[in-house]
Length: 381
Image (cartoon, rainbow, N blue to C red; front, top):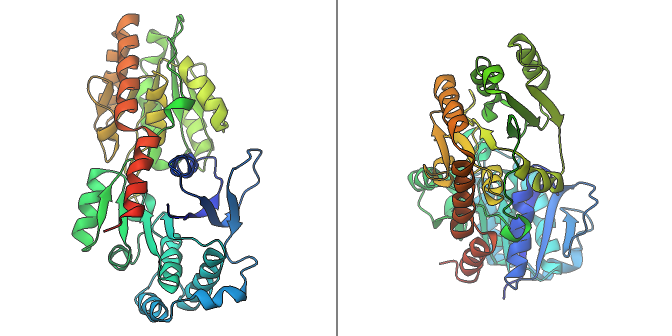
């Protein structure tokens, strides 16, 4: 099987566990894998594959493996790029190619369609090996550049939701595939929900505009006290102080707790303790959006029902029989969904959780997704 190199901006990243899940799952399919990143973060976790900093210790002795016809193809691709300095793209593309050559890589797969995809394409052309990339959200809808050339220059491209697939096919002619990010269901167990006297909700994510927490706070204001609701906010971000002030102004300090950032292990262990995960995702003013949020799948995998919005990949993950979908930025609809959920019996909530787990097992299992990705890597046409 082909040896696969995954390209990431930074690795590992607490908020980007979908990359680790995919790498682990592709490895489980039988591929030798490694990860190359522009920045490497310290981690207590051990990895069963190499993690290499792009450009570091690139060996000029590997230059003989550069394909000179591919060299001109790479130069042609670079000349069409407007979003990156061309000299830097060429320099790091060559260094990346030397590192890939040393590892005898057969296929390079980049996460995010910004500089990672550009460098992966250049390096792959230089070595005459296959390449692909997967896009995730902000790299398409907020800070996209040169997408047409990246799509047409890759052996295949992965869109993580149907809306993105449609958009990619409109932008350029290319080999565009649909594949949702998966969940390692073996790491998430279905737990029976505990009986508690109050409704215990979770919000999990970065505290930024597109996560929509400010709409949830407004929705809870008139109902938190009468319905005995408590919300744990798990995450940090640029809007943290602003959101804390909003909670205070809405009189919700006894009902909303800011927990800070938590590890992925904490999330797996504690998600089952919540009645529901509430994720009011929306488009930010700059166009940033979550296209296939892994947190929804992880909550559903442990049997925690989800209340979210009907945008992008969210509407492909959550169905009417597994949770609630409301229009983005609608405080009224969000409040009504919470009130509806509050009226459900314990048995109804349990059945929602069971159906949620079943949906993840059937449609978003990371190993099944990796088998499909592996097939495309082996047969990219």
